[in-house]
Image (cartoon, rainbow, N blue to C red; front, side, top):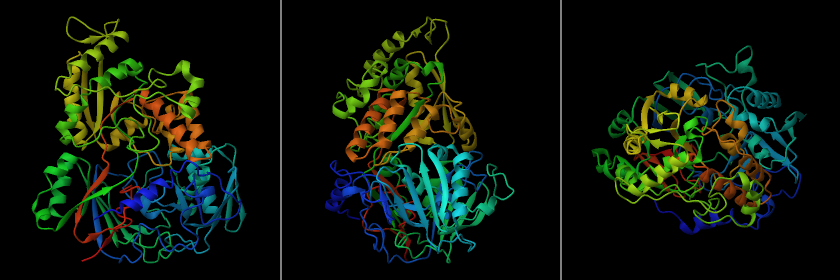
Length: 611
């Protein structure tokens, strides 16, 4: 598949035009809403009468099945709670939101359950008008009552990822038989979009039931699929709803084409790969470039029954690596965390695991306009945002910080010496028995927590553990099942663990869940490192109140500096393309959306089955 490079450049350049305005010009109902300047005044790129999303094939045939693999297990069909391990696919396939994203634009929403959205220039409120034809899978109408109940329930119960935005809602009210208005108590320009992406649940499903209890009862959504078969912990199958109310909407045209989507669960990646080779798994995402180059030569590939596909993208790298829990005393000192990064021999480990093919993650927003420049000092608006906190910032935040480079050898003696010097400054020295100890004689030990099936992370950890022995640090690796891991990370009961945090081209409220001081004390939040920083809280606020792409980019670059110079994560590498192997009958559009293969938005949403 060839990518239209010129079109890709245009699609990326337009959203990033720093002169574009972030405000809506009129407080009147619109078919969509944009965060920043796709066009002047923040208008969506597509007109009200658009036929389909440009990345979709409106003529894609319906039918066929796709089977995908999941490591681990599941014990609940309610994906909106913290208890249990939810089954794959329930939220994106069976539930809908008032608005829907276009993944060919950095952050634009178009009407889905809602036919229109209205907000003012200051974005002090948002009002949605439901489509009259919107229906749940059982044929009952989606009502304003369902919307208000869903927002309040998700905002106060269940998973905390929904709670932060709800706290910024001063009032929620029905303003008409199909219209609901939310008025805000906080300046946050992303709130209308955040609320537009809340899943709408059927209130009657939970009458007399505990919303936060795990359940294998099927919930009633309004989306393109319904749950068909469930074998707890083993398999879940979704069937396309032939009576889906929204199948002819322009936002959906050419999407959700498979009759059946199935997820098979496996205990380990070896079993997954054997199922891929046999054809039982018909589409699989590979995340290791070395394996991609070396092991995909099995008979189904050579015969053409299965196809290798590389999907480029323009997303930020995000952060992937071993996160250190600063709630633990051994990782509270930044010098210790820097020493842990020094001891991670990136060049050697990258060559060993990926053949050296993967680019290094140099900051949380690598590969995007929101990234800081490694080693360069803060300037302009970025410096202005950081200046009030200068006295409390870690070294390198303003002056410039770059990850330490290894010398390329297996022993990496230069990094070892730098690590020992940092540890000595922090009060850790090597004792006569060869162990690293503090002044009280306590040895430096910690546990690296991994999930069963994270084989690549385990291979990385094995090399890392051996390197740490050279400075007297005793690290152990523990492998847990997915349920145990969820419990441990939800309660922040770990020293170090493998972490992935994805970033978008329009950072917003998710940053609070990832890094805010409030999230550090909220069980179930994504702030695994436990960072509490007034500076981070302030620049997240600047992102949310930004009225232009330029303001947002400056605030994001400031955030990138604070996080990277905080030395909270031992970073790995990222892939600038997605790697997919699939049965030849599974087809995809020629045009690749800006976000590439992101969540469900590309595979399976845009794909179809064709003999």
